[in-house]
Image (cartoon, rainbow, N blue to C red):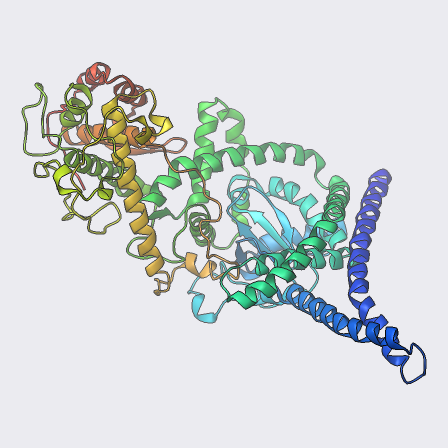
Amino acid sequence: MSGGGMSSEAGVRTARSRALAVLRLRGRALAVALLPAAVAVILLVGVPTGHFTGTGWDIARWTLTPLAALVLLTAAGVALVVARARPAMSPTVAIAEEAAPDLYRMVRDLADRLAVPVPSAIALTPDCDSWLEDRTHPAHGRPPPAEEHGDIADAGRYPRRRAVAAPVLVIGSPFLWWMRVGELRAVLAPVVAGTGPSAHPDIAAARRFVRGLDAAVAVTSEHRRGPVFRTVFAGLGWIARVLLRSCRVHAAEMERGVAAAAAERAQAVDYGLRIVAQEQVGLAYAGWDRLLTRVALPAWRMGRWPSRLNAGVVAALTELSRRDRLAEGFASRLGERPACDLLEEPGTVDEATSLLAARLFHGGPAGSGPDWSPVHWGDYPEEVVDRKWRTDAARLHRVLDTLGVRPGAGAESPGPDGPTLSRVLDHLTHPGPEPDLDPHPDSHSDPDSRAERPPSTSPPADGGRGADGEREAAPAPVSGADPDDEDLVGEDLVGTTPRSAALAARISAEVAREGAAATARAASTASAPTAPTAASAGLASPWDDRALPLLPLQPPRTGRELLADHITAMVCCAAMDTLGATPGLDWLDGPTLLVGGVRVTDLPAQVMMLIEDGDPTALRLWLARQGIRPEKPVRLV
C-alpha cells in the first residue's frame, strides 16, 4: 500500500516536472517577445539622460523601436488567439445529475475513496473508452439554448453549474449497457483517480497552454477569410506550431506521468474485479465494432438510424457468447445489476447516444426528418433489410437498362413483364457483344455514339425516385468503348468476367451519383428546423460538427462488393416473393435471409462464383434446392 503511494507520488512529481518545463518554455517565449521592447525602452530613456547619444545610437534607436512594436503586436496577437481559440472538445451527450443520480453517487463515492476531487460532470460518448476532459474554457461551459431541450428526463442537458477546475468524466456508452455495476466501478477507478494530478496548478496551467496552442493552430488553419486575414493568421499559426512542437515531448511525458499516478492510486480499489472488467472491455469493443459496421451502417445508408444501439450491443454480445459456447458463465454474469440501471431513463439516453453515433460515423442532421428517421430493432427487418434489398435490386435493373440488356434474354427465361433474377443470371452468363466498360456514361455527348436502349422493364414503384427518395434523371445511353480497355476497370475487378466488370463499374457510378445527390440535399436542408426529439436535445452540442462524419467507419465499397451486394439483394427479393422467405437481422452479421425460419449462410459463395467465373451453375442449383424460381418477376421499391 505504501509502495503504491510512493509510486503515485513519483508519477505526480514526474508530471509536475514536465509541466514546469512546458511553463518555462512559455516563459521563454514571453521573454523573447519582451526583449526587443526592453532594449528599445532603454535606448529611448537614454536620450533625456544624456546616454546613448550619437548617430549610431540614433539609427539603432529608430530601427529597434518599430521592430519592438511589431514584435509586441505579434506576441499580443498570438496571445489573443491562444486565449480566445476554442479548444477541441469531444462530441458527447451530457448527463445531468437529476438524470442519473445513482451514477453520480457511485462516481462521488469512488472519488472519496480515492481521495481525489470529484469530476464536475458526466458525459457519454458512443465509443468503448473513458477519459477525463478539461472543459474549463468559457465556450465549453455554456448550456444549450432552452428551446433545444425537449420534454425529456434531462438526458443531454448540460449542467447549469460546474466546478471551475475539475474535468468532466466521459464514459463510453457501451460500457453502461454491457457491464455490471461493479465492473463499471472497477473500470472507472483509474480514470477518476486522474482528477487528483489534474487539480495540480502547474499541471492544469501546462495543459491549458498546450490546448490553447492546439486550438490556435486549428483556428489559423481555416481558409474562410480574406487574403489579408489569411496572411496574418499564417504568421500567427507558424509561431503557434513552433511553440507546440517545442513542448510536445514535455506534454506527452506529463500525461504519461499523470496516467501512471492515477493507475497507482487506483490499485487500492477493486483490483481483482478490474482484471475481470478489462476482459469485458475488449469484448464490448468487439461487439460494438461489429454492431456498427454490420448492423447500423446499412440502416444509416438507407436514411434510418437505429435508436437503441447500446441495447443492440448487449444482444450482439449475447449472441457472440452463445456461438462461442460461453453461455454458462455468461448467464450467471447477466444475473447481476447492469450499469444502465444507474440512469433514470436509459431508453432516452440510448436514443441520444445512438443519434450521436450515427452523426459521428456516418453523418446526418441533428434531428429526425423525412430522410433521416429513427428505427427500432423490431422494425429493422421490414424497414431496413427489405427496403435495402429491393432498392439495390431496382438499381441493378436500372443499370441493366442502360446497358441495353433485354428482359429475360436467356433460353431459360420466358420473358415476363417484370424484373426477374433470370435476367441478371443470363446477362452475366451468356456470351455476346461485350458491353461498355465506361463507368461515366454521362461524360460523352456525341449523339452518333449512343446506342439505343429498350424501354425500362423495371420502373421503380415510387415513380422513378432513387434510393434516397429523390427523382432520378433518365438513365444516360450507353456509349461505345473498347472492351479491352482495362483502365476503365478498377483493380478490385481484376479476376472477374468482362460483363461483371462492366456491370460493377456502372453500379459504382450510379451509387456515387445517388450519394452526391443525397449529400447536396442534406447540405441544402442543414439549416432547416428538424423535429425535436430526445436525441436531438442531447446533441445541442458546442463541438464543431461542420465536417461530419468525423470518424467514417469504412472506406467506400469497391465495385466487386457493390456488385455482390446487388446480386445478393436480387436473390433475396426472389426468395421473398416466390418462396415466402423473410428478411431478418443477425446481431453479428447484419441483414440476413430467413428461409423457413432458418438463416441462409451459403449464398455469398455462389454469388462470387457467378461474378468471378461467369458460371451460374452453382447458384442455379442453390436456387433449385431452396425452391426459388428465378423466372418469376419480383417487386421492387
